[in-house]
Image (cartoon, rainbow over all chains, first blue to last red; front, side, top):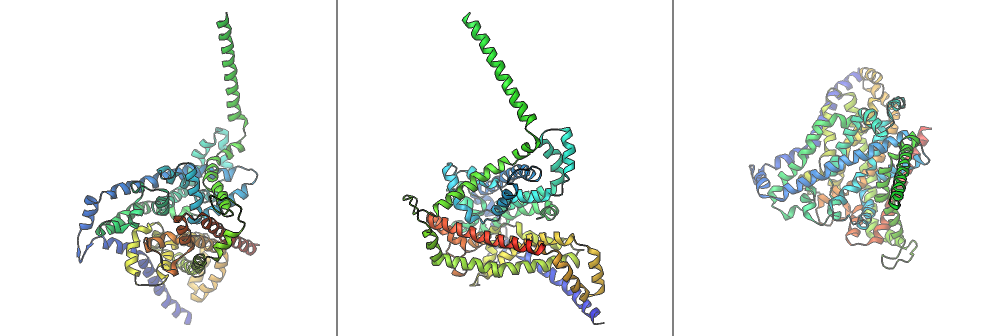
Length: 258
Length: 291
């Protein structure tokens, strides 16, 4: 009897709590969106008007963000899928150790890698250039590890039988492996895209020219610009990631298995 | 006569060269076996890793044991001792460890509760999950202004802790939910019908089953706690952060701006050691549990 009573009380309460928490987690996003339409005490589109017609760095910075994110995402996938394939299907001495090193690198905080990367870029003369941002980020240990983890489910007999038809590793990756890890690639791509879209330190340190920097650094240096454009700029900064999330959220939930 | 000879010579050379390249092609495509060609796929990634991570990292190790860039004398562990006795470094270390000891458990427990509730009581509302996952992708720079307005009055590290939880709960929920969905659901359905007490009893059985995933979530959250610098940096703007939010990354960043390579290098190595220690201990603990 007592148990039944308890159940009756808890179930709607649990539901309500989770719903409430979900709302709380969305509040910052919603408030930012609302605040972008605020001008003093009244609702207006003046901020957006300022942003679109009076704030010319915005377009350049937005384009830079798109440029870096798209190039780095494509590059990451192109580099890490074959690498993950090699980790899964090749056998060589020290494979296990190398994979552990990849995992450790994946866990390194950015600040630890800043100096090594900076020194490397400086010595190769890539500092203060777009390519200097792109190259180090393409080699993402995270993408290799996650893709490899997902490839565990691929049956090696499929690869074996494909080898009867073709001798090209790349063809086998393209025709046999890619279709099976589509979900994972979508998840990794979305994750990498959001990460690069959100990057702040690299453009601040590896670039000295404001014209090459990204939208994220624009918002850091908010005090230099007209205050009223910051909230609309914040919203515009969220929109692309938001759209990608709406398109690929199922893949994101299923593709990240660790 | 001479020219004719030359021509013959040339054609012979050409033929030889052709045969040579042919044999090379043959070797490249035919003889090199499947395994080696698989390894070749790893080369681009490995090359990039070597250029941008391994090699520079060795140089950082070198920087950490010399006097300075101009006077490259071996300094032993002096840079490390300097770093360890630096009050800024100690403060940074304390704050970073506090975030691991307080922030991470809060995050993982909250994520675990939400994933359990979502998986067993609210499976009819899958879009609820999105509310928790979305923050992981939303760029911090775009919500930081509202965060300043909401929490500007707090004079403690609370806003940063909240930002940490807000930002990282998504990936935790994804990982834990993935583990929960692989479990047998029927038994839990039965437990649910039997009542709350049976449900608690069942939790005692399921939780150990997903313990490896919980473990990994904790490990990943610790790593992510080192990454909160960006959020904190954006939140405090270009200003110097208050003492309670001065983490290791601030220490690194400030030394980077001052071009103090020795302090930075030894700080980087010490942080790396700390992370290796945590990851190593975590993996060992997990292995011990599994065996």
